[in-house]
Image (cartoon, rainbow, N blue to C red; front, side, top):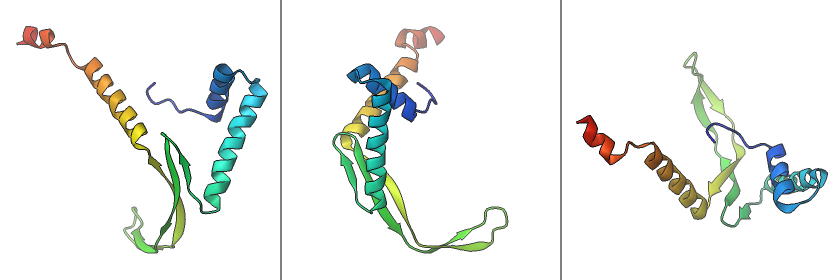
Length: 116
């Protein structure tokens, strides 16, 4: 999988293959779900998807930042930001996938003995 990014088109294709809707209907369904998530977050409400995670809106206070080129202090105005908090199920899935990848790339124990 590597550095690949999943796009809306990829999601629509997955819906098409797994559910059997037409490609047009699949794309429409993905678009509607994403639009509902966006509009709910824009209203300042949270979106919780079981076994996946939560999209939350957080208020950030005004603070002083720094221009990295000049080092000049610049005020950063207060704002609202969207954040994603993964569920424990997703965290466990990611950790399991990571540990499997590490085990697959680790040299076999008998290879370590041969190297000595």
